[in-house]
Length: 592
Image 1 (cartoon, rainbow, N blue to C red):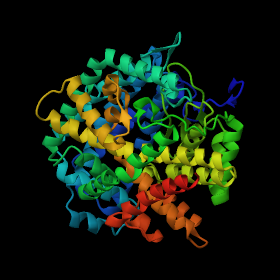
Image 2: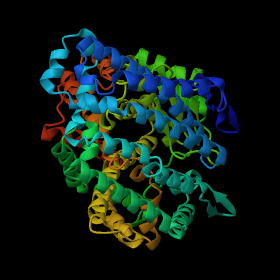
Image 3: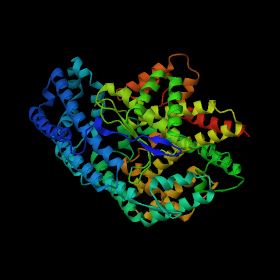
Image 4: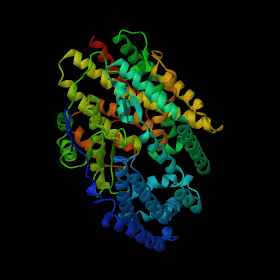
């Protein structure tokens, strides 16, 4: 536990449920066994997968799943150690060493999925008469979706082996560069997490100084960020061309098991809604401040009716679990485990990964949550969000290692729904008109950040990847693309300083997972539509909701949403979700 005067005791995680330590015999044994078992597996099955009958193929997949889970445990442990201390040379070395060992084992068994994809559909369907193999049907369906884009075994092996010295190395360089940056601020050198927090400070001069410092420091380091972005975009372009993906975003859409045109419809719907949502809201915010225009550092400024409470950790826990419990006792019960056990790392500290995440680890263990909790109402919502991920991961673990994880588009369902439950519970408990107005504004801004801003991020990525096909981009080129999408999405009310053109550089999603960001908008709109159904639902909604989460990756979006009468391929679906945001803006205006 880490204690602060106002926040109370903040938990830090204990990773012993994965391994006792970095030098533990258990970890060394697992890695050694993984290498030996992979060689035995390869000797037994290489070149023979298509000839196995259904029962034998199921036996092979079960063994493959066991081996993959063991590798996942080691990799999860290394990732969490690294996330807790990104700037520490020992943790970085440990992370890279484990990654290389795991990658080497993965290379040995790579043949298995490649051979599975080459089985003709009719032959595979005949084998499905074996019940044990039918169990793995969803995994085979999803894994074989890559069949049209699969390269020769030699090329696939080369790509996997070289990823350690290629893409993964550039991602690590980005992470360590960001973690080591320090931002001078009022006599102190702040981390990225600390300086970005100042952008929502009640004091306008503090926000201005923080924003200009962010822009200045990023600008002074912009060349390596531009190099990383250019290199990874070119790397993706080369692989996409070899695999035959039509557009840069197509590979991500395949990984999410959504059609290109469905994602296009989402992005178009949000763009069309810019004037009705972000432009309208920020116009209201400017009038609220008694101004015609806002500076870009005012985007996340708390409204004049601000909530200056510091929310202790205990209060945050009670608030989130109370909201979860009002919806479902089981949801709260699972969520409570994260607080009762050392599964959360909450304090801000130098070198720790910024932001927040929920890491699922492996089904035989449990998820871990990383937060940077500073006691703001928004931090409570972040806790509700990440706890939603954690509960989802616990519920889906029963599907086993190969089928527990959901596509990114559905992975945000439980997290955003948990946020909405928490917000609505807090709003119901607030009678004061001014306080309600502040809460509504905060929620609207969060939704704009999730839907509008993430859509703009996706469009920025699209334009950068498209432009990169014509040649390397300068930092100025990337900055111009950034400014264009920001001005379009945020609207005419904002003034932008020259330093704002560098703000693209700190966003990790562009580096870690290209085109990941639209999943946030997809998930938020989906949950808004789902919550609308919940508000009008009869008894039994919670049970259906928990069944949906428990399905893990076994069902696609159409099958998951069908019990709720929703269909993401219906053009009206996105308008339904966006309408919830518009409704909250209407409610905000009505508080005057």
